[in-house]
Length: 295
Length: 226
Image (tube, rainbow over all chains, first blue to last red):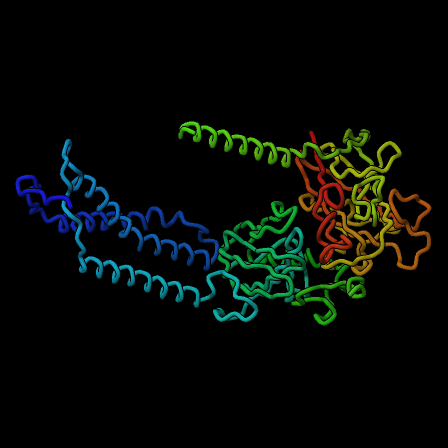
């Protein structure tokens, strides 16, 4: 066993209140950094303000960042302070002061992080329950916004999305066009493998599973162009499975719908079958007769 | 072995792997190695290039044209020979006249939306000489679609009870077939993928494997060049 160092070889007792210094520096840094980060960085967060859900997601990300900024500040302050104050003097051969358990700090850390996690869990749940936050909620959604909604079925297949509008007589198009300031109820499904419908600027992302009706909600804002792409590796041309959608004025939406109805009038008899016959509006698969014959 | 030598060997191995992956990705994106068909180009009186494509769609490509003789496939006619090439060089801003001879039976469309021919001149096709603006989804055998050009058309299949159906390709014109004709225009230079939307790969789960996922059968590119 090593002999205890003699009193002469021990470092002099340190009367500096390091804890007080660290706390003061941490509070000062946090008070400055948190609003700066929230204001300057928060507005850069995806997916932007293309829809009510997008705006909420930006808010969610900003809240998350604002909550973790003081934590990061604490770690940064302690790291820098520790490097400056607790390093060994050049040429020193003696051990530093022993590390001792401090139950107060442990309790403070556990309570602090526990409060943060519980707050974020509550906040996240509140945000989710408002309208689903743009995510797919499965066939029986629990976070349903009130009021009337425009229903649109999103149909994924290798390798494109098409969009069916039951309120427009089962009109289907490969363009997703939505009227502004409208609540939209998206029913996402697939005709073959698993895809994922991701309307980036709208803040909507919902898996497209064959034989399943995955419901998501979005409230559009003003006119804009948004990107749609498949977010699930789905085969050879997955990388090409994208296009643009548009949010337009109500008049432009009606005009577009009229044009599409004329363009697709020739196949209206096939599109307007009842769901039991494999037609619009929300049949989950559209099995053609030869496949049915083949079983 | 000294640590320095070990580090050097690891670095060399990582570099080699990176180079191999780089070549692989480069090969994919440039389509190097895919057999390409370059059709003869004529010039219309307007000065725009004009191209004629003759295509077969066959239920079984046969041992002469593929190591996978039972795979469904597109074929292109080149100098009187049917070849299994699905990457085609086309001039930009060209008029492309296409004739498809389909020797395959109906599989049906999963989505009747694809029954509407669109993106070609007049938004209609000729099926056995008759102008058509809608193909019965249940009679569709394949589709020819270039999504980036907005070009989609369904190809009607040969009737189940038709006589003289083709076995292995290339199929002689004496076999039962449907003839589909249309004209479309190419746009700016670029790689435009084309594909069949009908899950027609017999023997694969739900018809989605094999030839549906392999360039050279039911998928390809239009290399539109300036």
